[in-house]
Image (cartoon, rainbow, N blue to C red):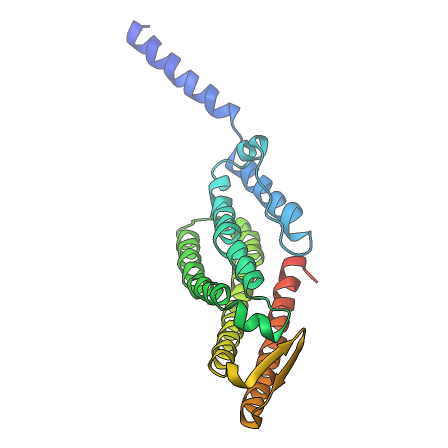
Length: 233
């Protein structure tokens, strides 16, 4: 046997040896299906596990498929959830007098909320586009679709319901604040009590407070739905 043939034979043998060391596609498929089923679908609510090095190795290229989900949830945590929570805390009020005194914070919170739906739409579109490009075997696709729905589609939908309702609440709070500021001569505060000397002003304030109360109830309902998605209840 010539030296050239011996070299080619050695290279081919090495390639075959290396190929035999990795998991087969069938093994990776089953590992990925089991991972999604046991680490996500068998648990209530939203659970986005981080892959260990061992899991990443066992899943092969399917780890990249799951990264579509983890990348979206990382964005939700960093760009959506934290900002929504901060905006609602900044916009919370404990008395009618706070409405006037905290107008800058409320205005800033409303401005923050206005950016969230756009950010969510952009990142959801990015995740959906990446998902559409996947070429998965049918058994993997069936479980992946369930996992994607649990960890991407449903929480995104729940957040999209909360944001506009929360924005409406803050808009109404600002409207009330502006009205109170414009009628300071007719409104005085004593602790948590408000005294209004002008009947027309009193009626207008009462109407705004009743509308705000209804919007706050709608927000509580949307937040409860979001919590149900997160907790799986």
